[in-house]
Structures are given as structure tokens and as C-alpha cells.
Amino acid sequence: MGYGKNYMQFSLLDARHTTVDRTWLTNVYPLYLHDLSEFDDGYYHLNEQGLWEPDHLPSWLDEEDDWPLLIVVDGQRIGFALVNQAPSPYMTPGMDYRMSEFFILRSWRRSGVGQRAVHMVFDRFRGQWELSVLPRNLSALGFWRRIVGEYTNGHYTEQILKTAVRQCFRT
Image (cartoon, rainbow, N blue to C red; front, top):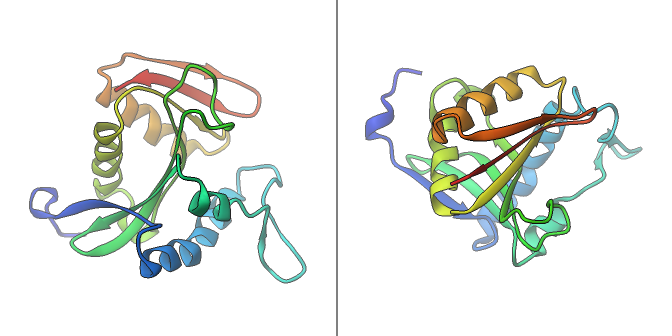
């Protein structure tokens, strides 16, 4: 995209803090579900009104212990990271955090902003992490293997399950 990573201003904003951020996440979340639906074997689907089901976004915006974070670069919202924090029912016991959802707008992908955003999230929330990737989502799987491998210097475990590839590591 013709920009350098070093001079860009990055921030993570809790989407619950302003109406504008909450609205942005609400409006962009369906783009993520559309991308994900290619790999999820029909879990997400469009209803008769053209809305994605199931809709998990309301819980992200209402749960106090979870983190709906917007990724902002030079004042522009370019993606989000939805992080569960223990004791979330969506996490494996013994984990402190779970990267449940991660999305970068297509025009910003493969530019380094995703890696930088993930590092910011991991640095902000220190502890035992887990994340899962749909096995058919080869692009995401390659991204997470590279990012987690670099971040942890290869100190992570990976389980290949029927429905997910699960990585665990400490930050």
C-alpha cells in the first residue's frame, strides 16, 4: 500500500466506549461473517431477511469480561479483535485469554498491520492464550502459525482437531 509500518499510529479501542465505535463494529461484523462462511461448513448462514445467524455480536458488546477491540491505524478503523477473558464459557479451563475473532479489512491485509495489531493485543493481555482456526481457512492458518511462531519464538503447542486447529501459548 505504499506506507511504512514505523510511522503509522496504531491503537486498540474498546468498541463499547463510544456510539461511533459500537456502530462501526456492528456494521463491519457481517463482512467478517461473510468471509468466514466460506470455511465454517454452514454454521453462519443468512436468514430470510438477509441477516447472518447466529448473531454473537450482542454478547460481545454486553459482556464485561470480554474485549471487543477495534484496530485503528492513523485514525482509521481497519479491523477488530474479539478477545475472551477467563472465566468465559467459550474458553478451555486453564486459559486466561482466547482470540475468538480477528478481522482486517481486505484493503489492509498483507500489509503488516495484522501482525502489529496482534502483537499489541498479546502485549496488552499477558497470560495463557488459546486460539482456534478453521482447518479449511488456509490463509488464516498460515497467518496464525507465522504470527504466533514469531511472537513466542516457536514456544507454542498446536492440536489439529476435526473442527479446528488449536494453538496454545504464553505471552
